[in-house]
Image 1 (cartoon, rainbow, N blue to C red):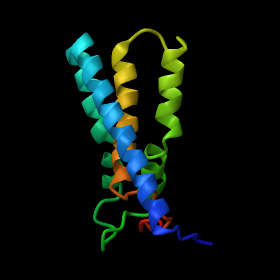
Image 2: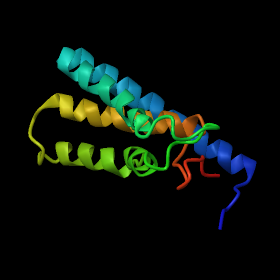
Image 3: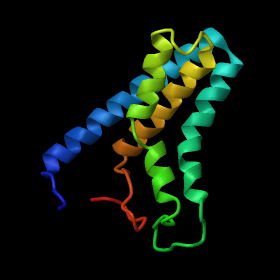
Image 4: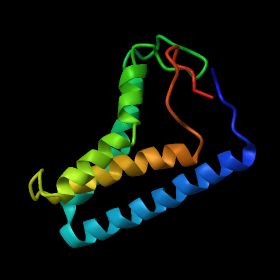
Length: 131
């Protein structure tokens, strides 16, 4: 069963995701200024990496859909709790003291926040966008 939200609620969600994205991008800039090149490389890689899953089974689907083979990987990379776990683990000291890992988590979460702010979410089994 699909639940259609009121337009005001959809707008509020997208604005909240946009605010989070702006915060995360500013945090990435701060970390890159403080820690240099490796932090920048890690953040940029994870800003891009979640969408690379769209190339799994490329050419198998059309009309803006993902290949059904790509959907589980795409959805896995676009769940916010995974980079949140990375950030929490790093912050608690359980993942060492390598700053690029932290900026990678920030970049990954920023990617997800930007996608949600622009109206992109998880995909249905057939590769279409969920409503």
